[in-house]
Image (tube, rainbow, N blue to C red; front, top):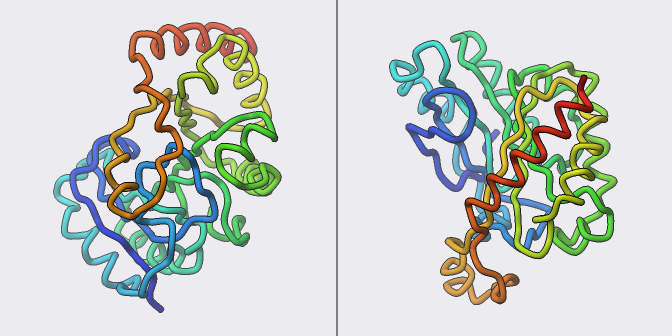
Length: 239
């Protein structure tokens, strides 16, 4: 068995707890307008086996200490469920912490995959069906299938939300998001990521029109203000 892997990054610091190895898979069903990895949209030649990936992860184990591990990302790792399961079986024997960074849109088999995952980083694209469709080119209902399996798995969840000027940078959306997250169990933290245009050059090199040419980077101070507002209303709902 082999999978199409774009790259493997060591010393990742923003893809879960501690220092992590991040495995970036090729292939994704979504075409998010703010995606900064368009080069990973399509699957390419399968190039690595579970054993080879596990070996690369284990070489970095001295840096993990008590909190680090591996994060499967992409692209969309849910398109490679069987491969991740086989890799995770090897890594579990070595007590490696396993995280999954996903948008929740794959090919199914989520229940089995989640048995081998210690933490899920779930990217929320939008809470409104029509706007989700506009941003991703996909139906939000597929995400609900993953969330159902995620809730049944009882695995801890970190939520990630990109804040985009003119799209979801309002207090009204903060209320919608707080309400939406009520149906996702075991959320440990929620992170806001300010939209940036750093991926624009990749689109140009690939001869793909950059969808958000008219948008500026999200103001970080405003993003923090929205996060503070969201935190207040979200905590009130929890209690």
